[in-house]
Length: 267
Image 1 (cartoon, rainbow, N blue to C red):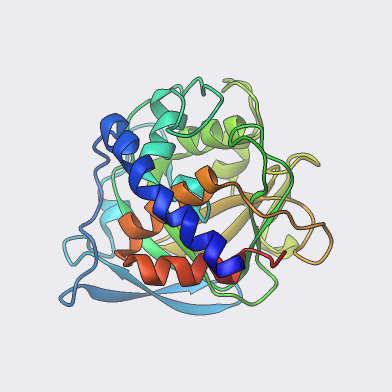
Image 2 (cartoon, rainbow, N blue to C red):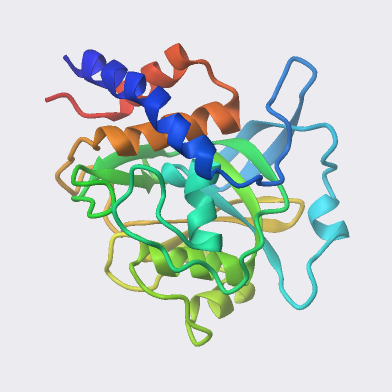
C-alpha cells in the first residue's frame, strides 16, 4: 500500500512538472552528474561521505569568488527546496506550484551561484501538518540517526540563508534578524554545530560539514526522529521532493520512488 501510494504520487509529478517548468527560473547549477563526473571527499560531522559534483567546479571556487560584503555558505536542503522552482520562491518571491502560500522572497533575490548533490549521514523523516502543501507532514533531518539522506547544497550568501530560514519559520526577512550574524560568526562545534534560534519546526540550525572552508548549513526541528509523531506528506509535497531528487541527483523515477518509499512511514 505504501509503495503504491508513493508511486501514485510520482505519477502526479508529471502533471505537477508541467506547472513547475512554466514557473521555473534558471538556477545556475552544476550539470547533472554523469559517468564523467568526479567525486569530491567532504568532511561531515560524524564521518566522511562522498559527493558527486561537476568537474568544472574546483575545490577552491567558493573561496576564490566570494561575493562582496557577505560570506558565502552552502545551504543544504533535504526537502522540497531540493527543487529549483521551490527554492526560487524563497529568493525571488512567489507561490510554488502545488503550494497554497505566497513567499515574500529574500532581500537579495539573486539565484544560487552553484548547486551540487550531497549525501548526508543522518536521516529524513516527515512530521507536523503543512499549511503550504494542504496538510500532511513535512521533512525534517536528524543528524544523529544513521541514514543516509539525499540532499542538495546551494551556494548562497549568509544573508540569503538567513532569509530562506526566516521564511521557513513563517517570518518575513528582516535586517535585524540575528540568523545572519549567527551564521557569519559560525556555529559552536563544541555544542555539536547547532544553534537553537527558537522552539519552532525549523528553528534549529545545524552545520553538517564544510566545502572548501565554507560551512554547509541546514535547519530542522529540535526534536529527533524518535521523539515526535510521524505524518505522511501530501502528494504535492512528495512531487516537489521527487523533482528535486531528479534535478539534483539525476535519479530516474524508480530510484526516486524507492527512496521516498523508505522515508514515508507505513500506514
